[in-house]
Length: 382
Image 1 (spheres, rainbow, N blue to C red):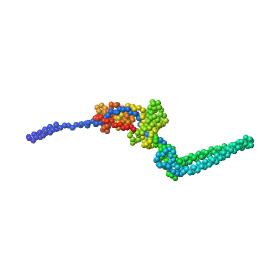
Image 2 (cartoon, one colour):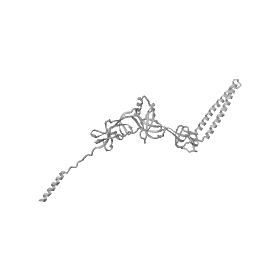
Image 3 (cartoon, rainbow, N blue to C red):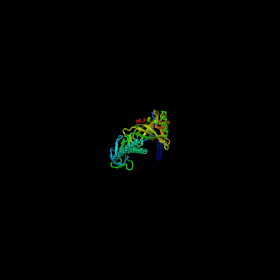
Image 4 (cartoon, helix red, strand yellow):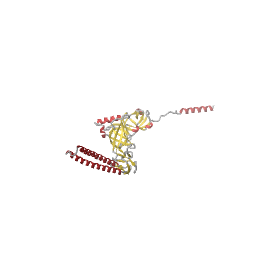
């Protein structure tokens, strides 16, 4: 009897303990914290942005235009030279001799002409008194005219010989940098045609060439028309560029050319600017970032950090904190980049709370814990 009581007491104790134990329940994690800020509102100059290529202001191949042995190289590879500087000398002696030959032939022709002219005058006077026949007068005149023509021909030969003699001294036609020489002293040049000796490149100023699409062309023309200007007034429009390794747009110039027609296949227009390059920081062939102001005056704009923008199949978007702190994916239209900030032209309101940090932890539709965050500091545009 006592053992049955003990079993019952143990069972009752287990039931009491079991009745006191709490059931396990899922507790959701707290909303993720994200940094939010309202769009920055300030006036910004709207820019057209493009990628361009630097092009030499002048670039030519220096060639041997006459045949001969290269006698002298008068510059050091890669050095800057002034216009008119002698760079290569092709042996001039054979061409000096040809000049002397041409001059001698000219002197002989002049002597013949002088004698023929005297003879003609004599026959002409005799013909007046019928001492000489008209046939003799005509013959003397023909001889004189022929000798006069020969003088002109020999003068041309002298000029040509002097031109060829001048070609033996290859000079720089403009200021620039000369590349390495391609032919050594003693080599025969100009034998079968012009021989390339080196290349001369003018680096200051320098061109930047880029393309704009058809819509931008129409905007530019409209802006020029509003200012009572045409494409011929491009020199009044500034252009700024920055190298791929530079921040902002530290190099400044002006537009100086636009193609007269839009390329049919691409629907783009070739535009060119010219910039000072006194420090030779810019070299032909560099790819650069280009921007051109679309308007003279700054316009009120909303800006957000460029890093806050996402990309989807529908385009660019921002995450905005909506009702009950639930994230919304807001499709936006972007404008120019201003330092680390991006202009938003549509899709955003001044009072919106934009997620600018913690983006990697959240997605649209989630509830978040928004925390105030500071916008990135602006950097100089250059």
